[in-house]
Length: 296
Ligand code: RIB
Image 1 (tube, rainbow, N blue to C red):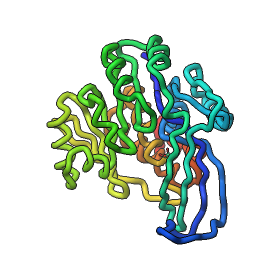
Image 2 (image 1 turned 90 degrees about the vertical axis):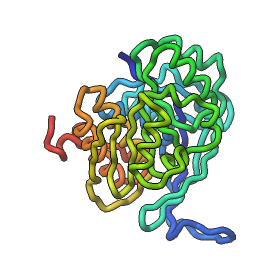
Image 3 (image 1 turned 180 degrees about the horizontal axis):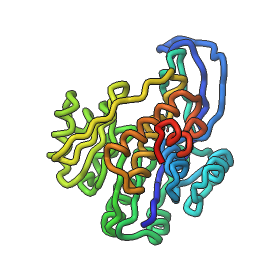
């Protein structure tokens, strides 16, 4: 069984600000840092740091060295990462004094996937292999259809949620990881139980993880709900906390751990990420996570 994450790679330009800027305002930033990020890359790095071999597929631009270096450092396989001689995907992230962030995303090369490239990547994968997706690249509808034909297990983190996802056959997804906002966008429900019930009705046969920010996370497979609280920490930067949770949850499942233990490991990894600045640099190693939890 192989694990492929086909997703975004972004250079994150992170500005420390007093408060998230409002329309018409100009504000000094006390610090600017550049990190490797992107929902796709963050999740691949979380998987690799959790100890699961992962192939990342995607496209970087002429500013992509920092992203390839991050892959190499974490042990993410870069065989399916291509480079184009144009500006790559990047973000402008404000982080305020309460560690809240807001993100402007420029797709760049993340939005330049082609059928030919998708076919080339998926040719090396087949039945039972995992495919992890987020919503920061183009061609998602095609990728989902092709992977489903091949009987791959499709894991979908539909983030950031937008209308493009309406063209995707999400009925082909094996596991969804969504936050409350995405859950509401998909189902129209606000209450967490209603979101999960509506998702199970809409996508029978799938299983779901609903993350609830400070209120923890719930897993639901249409029959049983499993709850996990957060580990409280002093937040420094919440960027990539969700991606760390996603990567560690999938990695723990692949390692054969129970749902409860997988949620617990994901919550701990995510809490460590929140206590550190940046996207990929904030993601802890498996040793750190297991040591804090006192597990093997
Ligand atoms: O989920 C966090 C990520 O979202 C950041 O690293 C940024 O690149 C955006 O894609």
